[in-house]
Length: 316
Length: 316
Image (cartoon, rainbow over the protein chains, first blue to last red):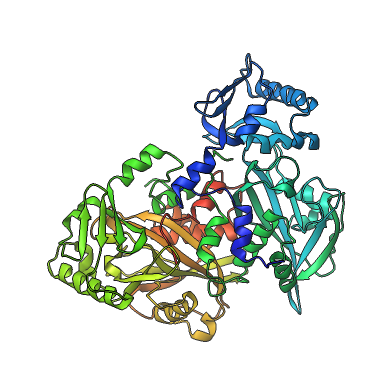
């Protein structure tokens, strides 16, 4: 198996093209996607694969325009956010029952927020449907580390083989999606307890360190349809742990946690063992902690800017 | 005087429009600039204000195309990098003598590198001319800080009133431009000694923490012509200092260094006292050290991505 460079890891996760790099190539890829829009909201909220948009079983609440390549959600008699959410929820349940899309079989019963151009919440959508519509999703990712006599070590879980997405791959210490109404730090505290059995008084010491933003297009490892757009914003946290605090699986997400040296993490990254967006978080961690320097890495400038992509959709 | 928000500080430094945000507005601004190109190099190397390109006293080594809005540098009988550099250097000296452009009166006798699409060095240009051609420039910026009983404090210099650019404004502890052939860490060590009298064994402890990239359009505070493009890549370093190491002005760059609390730095930022790109470095420092969190700042996502702009030119 060929070893992955750091730029390979970035290219694998932030894999929707940039218009600046090559307008023609960008337009070629972009033309394979429809714009998901909401009536009354002047912005494209996500990119939908053309065949997904065309396979959506439409009702009067939807309008597909093949000329403008737009799928418009225009819920009738829905004047409030709650009304719109209710129409969408009922609709997606119907689509799920018809078994049109594989990803909906991983129904989560969790609502993800969608924001308009003025950062206002305009809609909430069942989590498993988010990639069908290509909307921006939000999450928290935390690296717990220990300063040892042998240098820094990172707490690294392996995902359960039973996970719908990226089974068996290596992950960040704690990570989770931000549901409608959740704040990042509150979400992190909850996930620390659920995923790693870290009690609140310890999780509270986690430090906000920035954002990871990228535009991912899903491949087979994500499960379900491929080619779905997944633009994501991940709030980044670091947690320095004393040697005697050992994360333990608290739910069925992780099978175990191992304390790996920076060298071991690098090896696993190069071998492609990490879930793609978790690899990116580790690259950011290495950059921020001076473990990957401009002198080490020829592609430093490109890598750092691509860890912080400015998305072409409204965000939170 | 109105107080500046963090987003105001970002908008002031990263002030060339983004095409994604508003293609028409972008195209409107972009149409006021010519593309600076080099024969044999298939990339736009910088954006030149139209009136600057039109005022360039051209020789046979240059070709201005009003239709494609391109200024092409095509040095005759220059087959090597050294030849091209020599033709450019001689030409810019002539332009300087003719006193066509104000910025060339600040001649630095320092060469800045220009890179092509494959990261190869294609040309070197006198520093004071770089903004005329709108090329990407590179530098290092370092924040020296002290952990005190009253919390973190930052060593903050004030620029001399005699500086050509941004006289009297507040600055980062150490900052400097990367000349052709320099490596970031080597440049930092040199600047630590020159600007802040920090000896090499202390400067060596500085830690690489990432990159700041933005696309600045100059205003009157920069001195000389306004509206010039200045896309920049700044290598970021942190240096944690013990309480007894006191930076001292080593050249004529700074008048003094003051040890300011985070609150005092915030106040000075809000009052617009910092040089624009130094303000951005401090915003990045606050984000990275958890001093500015997603819960504090509604514009967190936009701010973090704009601190790491993917430039529309080839870079190092």
